[in-house]
Each structure stands twice: as structure tokens, then as C-alpha cells.
Amino acid sequence: MLSQVKGLTPHFTAETLRGYLLDRSVRRDQGCLIVRGYGSQRGVYQKVAGRAWAHIAAYVVFVGDFDPDLDVQHLCGVPDCIEPTHLRQVSRADNCRTRMQQPYCRNGHEREIDPANGRYRKVCRVCNNEAQKRWRARQAAEVAAARATHGRSTA
Ligand SMILES: [Zn+2]
Ligand SMILES: [Zn+2]
Image 1: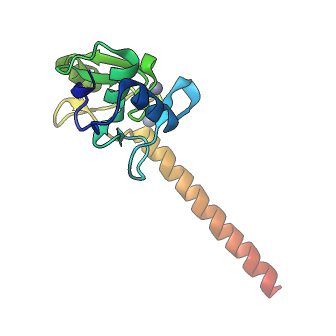
Image 2 (image 1 turned 90 degrees about the vertical axis):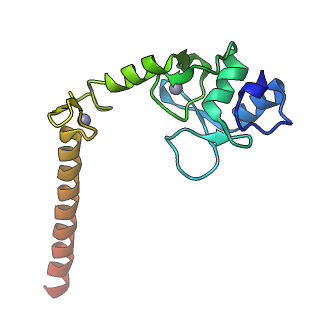
């Protein structure tokens, strides 16, 4: 069974791998179990226990009936989540289809179709505008604060 987990350090048993995964993970909102892999980048697929993908290892030891020909997909959309009830195996074709069909950005805005290729744009224009607005507001606040300080010191 564990031999199906590519890159896994061979000394693990299902039991010790379960413990290892749980030791490295924390429960988050929406019930996600976020695992900490190597490296500092969070929010992406995590490698653990040698060079194994954490979500695949979790599927094998917590869910079982792993089919190596199928992808493991996150129902929650969180790549570093290993909560067994959030993991599902789907065919590669299904996985691609659902990935392409996300009609909303992660903040719930409707996504735009790029006329160049007929696919959804990667960047959400509304989110982008809001980020720029926040940035400008921060800049304006800093300028105002600097002016206020300056005004006091010269008064
Ligand atoms: Zn999750
Ligand atoms: Zn958005």
C-alpha cells in the first residue's frame, strides 16, 4: 500500500505515517487540516516524509483504496490540506474539467473570459482593483501622517 506513495521514505508504516502527518498539521477554519511540508511556502502542495506529496500520503493512510492512476483532488480547494473528508480521487480528465470550470474567483467575483483563448482569465479584475484601492489608501494615509508630523515639527 505505502509503496504506492511515490518518493516516500521507506521506513514508514501506515501507523507511523499517520502520526507523522498529524504531528505536522493544524486544523483550520472550514475544517481543513493544513500540513507543513519542507520549505517556507504555504498554500501550495506540500512534500513530506522524503519526497512524497502530503495529500497523496494522507489519502493512502487515512482514506484507503488509492488508485495510482487517478489524481487526488481537494474538495476544499486548499492544496496543503490533508483532511481525509476533503480529499477525493477523480480521473485526470475530470480534474482538468473542474479546474477549468471555476466560474468565480476565490472571493466570489464572476470571472471574465479572455477573448484571446476563450478561457477564464487568471487574474480577477475586481480583486485587482480592490487591491490597488487598498494600496492607494495606504499610500494616502502615509502621506497624510507624514504631513501631520511635519506640520507639528515646524509649527
Ligand atoms: Zn481542506
Ligand atoms: Zn475577485
